[in-house]
Length: 630
Image (cartoon, rainbow, N blue to C red; front, side, top):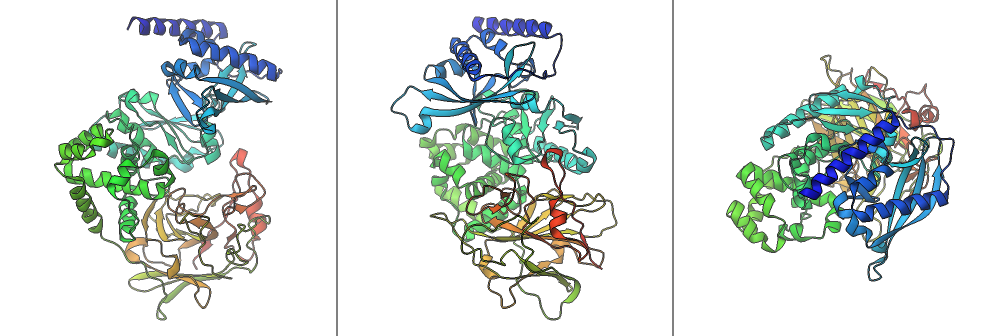
């Protein structure tokens, strides 16, 4: 305790000295100097020596005031993609030594890329060499380290809602996203009731422009969202200590991670960590109700894992098969809560770390054996009511809308190329006709392509890749509603947008204006391939999406998806990148290309011209008009 008090006093003393010395100058200075490699080596060596002492007062002068004042500063980056608390670093430094690889200088900062080398010769190569990146800025004529989130967001705008403080780039028009902010507040309120807790402060929510920037802000890989995973040492911290980083202003999955820690539930176990987040907030592209449908579908297809394997599988394997494990974990948590209540669920979560005594933990919390629990869980999933989607258009259905699309325009903005596999033959992304019909029970959609293909897997994986047709719908309702203007890299005009979206790929799914999938079929790709007319036909109950009328508006686009990514990552087509992997479409930029290879447009508009008008740094996306239904 004495040592802790001394460290706290040292910390405030150093902060006071630095603050006075900078004369409250919080903005990062323009630098006319460039960091040299030798300068970087000297800086990093001195920094490593300071870390090795375990003395916080020795470490603080190496950092920007902006980072030091951040509540999460002491949970510092160690390697790219991982963090450790400051108190754990001295022991780590005994095993690792830094080696600077490269230095890059920009107008207002420099980047030092290095590798921490382990002296442990028996470790694997991956363990011996761990990459790290430090961002360096000039403050008062000296180089200091700054966390990228503090560097790149200093000029962002902020907005406070009931439960969050949002930080977004200046070019983002918040008025276009207020429906997401309201939905996020409502979702947070529901979770607070679930855990029986109240917020004493607001949670910081950063909304970068892209998945790449999302990772860059916290030195992690590209992702659609990150939040603090509240391990034992994080429990019950002030909400101000928590961060959410997501390109979408509505990401309840990450909010659930934060609130779980505030509720006092430790998430050192990934099944509990992700299970609670999925049960309460869904996943990146799907809402929480869909987790039950997906888990039920997987059970019917014999894809669910035995619970004993789920609880004992290595963490790496769990995340590698997250398109199964996330949904199963989420559905299991929902079942346990619905059947036994929050207090028994909380008790189970506190004992689950001891996998060897899993049976005892189950008996203690639920008075059930593992086998009995598994049987009850499966009955719970099978009791979920399912909605039938069909795959034909009856001859007597009434036509509502139809439009043809030019042949051989499946090139995006003119520079797209197909995934490099023979199954993606010419024409499988080429949209030719889109038609809508209805009767008293169903809406019908017919999508005609130049060619249909059999889905393809890669290597030993059972992941199936196939074209994805996105049908975004504005149902014409005159009542005040929220419409989503953004759709996988394109944007609709200010007075247009969708409140219903169908994805037709490895399955058929339906999502809302928040971009969250709320219904999906099982994997049914073989239900609609090899039609005589190269057409995909769907029947969707009116109860699910409403009755098509002449004032409905549509957007139709074709991209690439798989049964792992269609509902999990972003609820639709995969990215288009310049340096593409075998199953990623190719474009002319590393990221930021619209995700569509072919889109439906009025005859007066040329696809190449429409899709070419975008610029990622300034958040400019191609403006694509929706097609009138009349």
